[in-house]
Amino acid sequence: MKKSRIVLNVVLAASAVAIVNTSASAYSTRVKDACSADYGSLCAKYKQGSSELRRCFESNRRVLSTECVQALVDAGEVPARYLKDRK
Image (cartoon, rainbow, N blue to C red; front, side):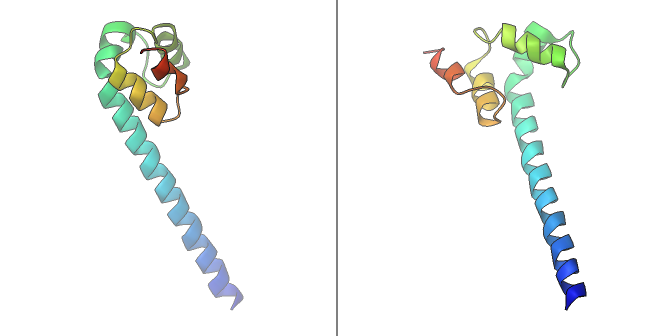
């Protein structure tokens, strides 16, 4: 009984990790797709995923494409008010 409970917990934990990794990958792919033009024109000198790139996007947030900002909001990377600031 105790062994089957341990196995069940391991399976549940592995499933949770797989789900989290899948949704994180989906967000990063969506953000990459939506922000690739902005990255190329504004912040290409910074390594993807770096703190410098985050600062570059932050300092250029008013000129980022709406698609990029929407993807960043959906991924939880920036607050939703960034979309309101655009309208």
